[in-house]
Length: 315
Image (cartoon, rainbow, N blue to C red; front, side):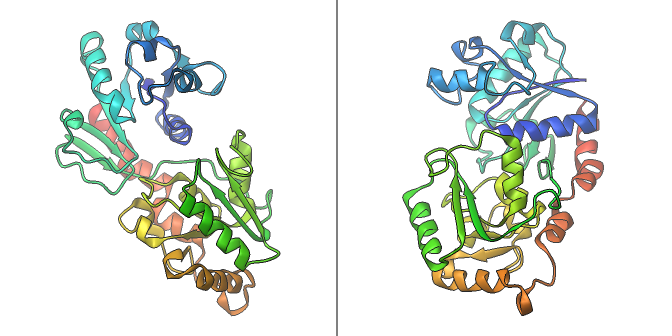
């Protein structure tokens, strides 16, 4: 089975590869600047960005295919994960492969009433948004790799952040928390941060398993939130502002002072709470973050009860 998927988020594409393992399918991505030059991949106007996503260097582990080859290949399905690519891909495959279903993967909080989503018949939805006009719809949690904490023992009294180009408010809040916790290890990763972009997938996974807390501050919130869910899957609680996530997918696993700590009550109070949590004693949670994550986001359950029936209905 062959499925073509656009590429704008590496964690998402890796989750599709894991989905492909369950389906017995191989996911391919666009490769070559002709996709960009013919406006079939235009999530960004910059040619340099297009080269990053469509070139052979950045994602060597993602099988790629040229525009010409894609039009000649018989696809079992096509998955579009960025709104700017949806209508161009619908038009392209309506001409060359009219019987191939085009599936919209929703990972951001888009409004289904937008004109570009008018013909979105099949929706893989990893957000809390509603898609009442879809012929087939499933809400799910994208899968990712979980590494053993025994291989990466937790570093006591440590906090990390993974966010590209954090806002000034996020950076200031991170520094305020650092000041409240002298002697603790604080590291910020991502483009535009002190430690830079994590280019190794192994390092991303190791951080999730090794640090004691994740700091996540995004005023717009995430649609799904790979970093947050990855932290919980590795039994790492998240320091976050609940107002950013109350209406997002992460809200399903937010349990105060067990899976998460609320920055909206003030940095000083949160610092005291996580010190108590870190020191264990009487403050140990009744249920761990990974247990709550498994209750709400179990990949095996979602495959058997949600995703498998979804694909059986349309393929």
